[in-house]
Length: 267
Ligand SMILES: [Zn+2]
Ligand SMILES: [Zn+2]
Ligand SMILES: [Zn+2]
Ligand SMILES: [Zn+2]
Ligand SMILES: [Zn+2]
Image 1 (tube, rainbow, N blue to C red):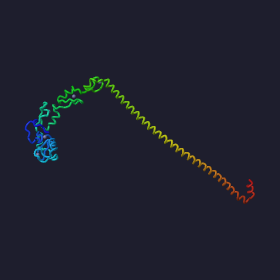
Image 2 (image 1 turned 45 degrees about the vertical axis):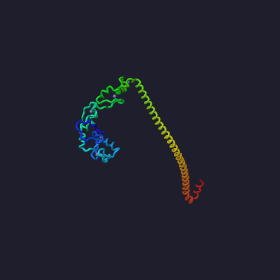
Image 3 (image 1 turned 60 degrees about the horizontal axis):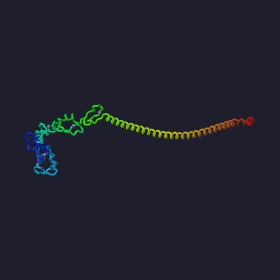
């Protein structure tokens, strides 16, 4: 929908009017046949038609283009009255600046900035409204630290509020304590499990070592036995050797002096 022609100050070229709504072009688009329309107007028209509303030439959304630059410039320079002229705004500005003005127009209706307040006021009256708005908030005059909306102030009871807060804090703290306790318990549990595991591991290692030790002792005993036997054999062999040597030493003497040999034999 275009801008109401009535709002413009001075002459408006007919080429800047929308062929659908006959008002001044708003967000204009142009057909290949050079007819121009507000984008909302022509989009709506093309839902049920497939031709230019002015000359019935075939037309679809895809063939629409931006307005020629000189026409855009003409459009932007048109002088328009503020939409809030009815409330008393006397501003007249170029069409291209209209949105900027309306965003800060003192006569525009805006919502009260306090949450929950349904009041709509002119921007210029907002400050006055805020000072008496029943949804404005301020901290409790008795110093309990709560922020109160004016409408709640009558029912506000510092002690009750503080008690509720204390209760909430207490519940929160109990919750945290319980949480910490559970965490510690689970940590202890896992440590205990770990130690039990370690202990049984150590036990089995000790058993293993004991087994090894007894096997080694067995071997040692066997070795000692063998050693003793060997020494015994060695001693016996030594003895035999000595006897044999003695025998050998005596042999020639016995051959030359049999008496000597006989004497020795008697010994
Ligand atoms: Zn239009
Ligand atoms: Zn046309
Ligand atoms: Zn205004
Ligand atoms: Zn308010
Ligand atoms: Zn209070």
